[in-house]
Image 1 (cartoon, helix red, strand yellow):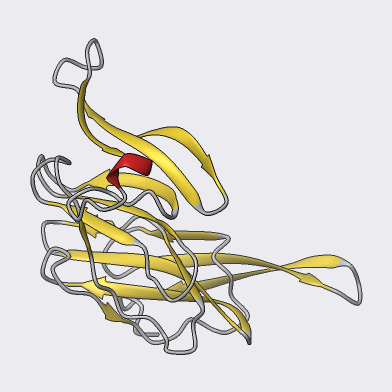
Image 2 (cartoon, rainbow, N blue to C red):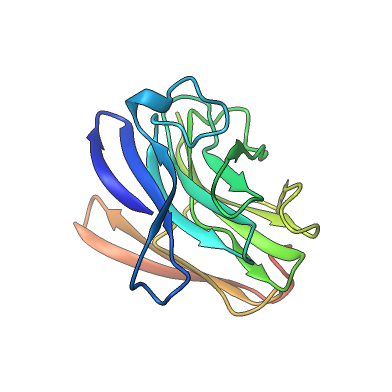
Amino acid sequence: MLSEGGGSGVEAVDVLHTRDGGASWKLLSVSNETTIHNPLALPFDGNKGGLSFVNETTGWVSGGARDHFPWLYVTHDAGVTWRHQAIPFPAQAMGVVTFLPLFFGATDGFLPANTFSPEGQAVEIDVTHDGGTSWSALPLVPASADAGTIEFLDALHGWIASNSLDVRSKQYRSTVYSTSDGGEH
């Protein structure tokens, strides 16, 4: 995925593919002001966070947009066409920024996201057991966490490293949250 630039909540990107180790590239799809009304293209609206494929045909683009729109798009034809992927998010969330899904095998995966509400920022992690066809929210990560770093070793073991600024002391406080049961606790 090649960023062509943007601003003010929009970003144009090109999705390219190589079959020869990068010696040559084929343009698969574009997202820019000309694709605004194309339901099979990545939207021009939103900041794209990354591109990840789990096999030759199925991949996701993560990112963030304004308002109540959880930004996640999926392709099942190697990046030629894209569809919005529905994900749950808290009703009070005013914005959602998704990170790339993390898959462990063909069916099990996690989708980390930052949500923004009047109460502040929170981390939400959704889980799939059907290869990303559907996602469900795991129990909420502690309210003091932010998604400084989210890593999963496998489908059971993961960590969130969170840094927050203590306004009174003007120092950062770091906390590491861990799970050994796939995010249930």
